[in-house]
Length: 472
Image (cartoon, rainbow, N blue to C red; front, top):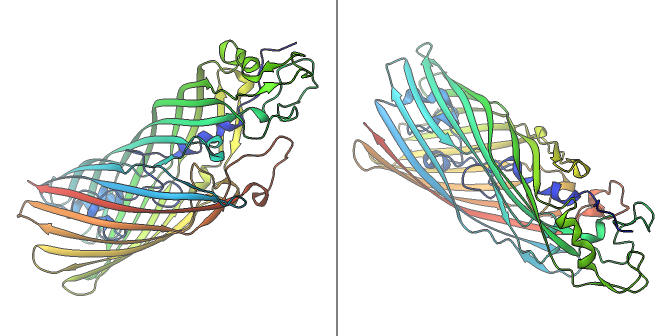
C-alpha cells in the first residue's frame, strides 16, 4: 500500500548555506567566507586597508566610524562595484569541467555625512558587508547541492563621531539589517524513502535500483523581509604627527527568515518493472511520485530558519611616510564560527532538520598605499590575503572558497573643489581547492571530507569600482 508521507529533504538544507550572507545585489564570494569588503572605491583601491585613516568620502561608516571627523561640511558619495566572477569544477574521474555561470553583478554603496562642529559629525550610510551568488547548470551533479542561489542583506547605519581629545576620536551607531534569499536545487529520488508499507522501513528508491542523483523535483525557497539588528563602533588615535592607529568592532547580526518552499516535479523517465514491490506491475516512477506533490509533504508550504552574520574586528596603522606617500596596514578577524548550524523548520514537521556547516574564524591582512601625484590626482594600490572560512567537508557549489590573494589599484581625481571621482580595479585569485558535489549517500554515516570530495574547484574574479563624492 502506498503511503502519503515522504522522506525528509536533506538536500534542501544545503540551499541555506548561501543564506548566511548575500548582501546587496548578490555578490560572488569576494573575501573570506561570503564577506564583501568593496564598499567604497577609494578604499577598495588600497585593498581595504583604511581602519587607521579612512578615505574622506563617508565610507568610514564601514571602515571606521570615528573617521567621519575627517570630512568637512556636508559630504555625499555613492557608487558601485561590478564583480565578474568565473570558476569551474573538474571531477576526479571523468575529468569533465563544469563552468560557473554567474553574470556580472553591481554592488552599490551610498553615504552621507554632516560635520556638525569641530567635535561632532553625523552620517547615514548603506553598505553590504556580506554577500554571495552562485549559478551553475541544472544538468550536473552539483545541482543537487544548489544551482541558482542568491541572498541579499543590506545594512543601514546611522553614525555619530566625536572628538574626545586632540588625538582621540570615537564613532559608532546601530545597524539595521534587511535580508532576503532565493535558493534552488534538484532533489534526488534515490535517497528518498519508499512511501509504501510493503517494504521495510528505511528502504530507499536507491535500494530498488534507482541510480544515485536521479532528479525528481526542483525545490525553491523564497524568503524576504528578514530584519536584524547590531552595532558598530570605531576608534582613531593620532600616535604622532605621521602615525595613526585605528580599530573597529562590528557586532554579529542575526536574521530570522520566514518564507515559502515550493516543489516542482521533474520527470525521471524511469519505469518500475513488473515485479516491483509498490504496484506489482510495470508503472512509471513519476506516477508513483506524483501524489507527494499534490497532497503529500512536497506541497507548497512555509519554512523558517535563522542565520547570523559574523562579527568583525579590525585593527591597523597608517604611516605618512612622506608628504606625498601614505602607507596603511590592517589585520582583520571575522567570527565565522557563528555560521555553525542551520535549523530548518518546515510547515510539514516531518521535514524539519538541522544542517551543520562548521565554519571557522578567519584572519586577513590588508596592505595599501596612496601616492599624491599632483594636487588633484592620487594613485593607490594594495594587496590582501585572506583565509577560507569553509572547512574541507563543506566546500560545495554554493560556496567553493579557498585561501585568496587580491591585488588592487586605483585613481582619485579632484575634478573640482567640490567633486572627487574614484576608480579602482581588483583581481581576486583563489587557490584551487578540493570539494564536493554531493552529500552523504544513503547508508553513509558521517562520511569524511576525503570520501565526499570528488574534484577540484577553481575560481577567480575581476572587480571594477567607481564612486562619486560631492562636498557641499
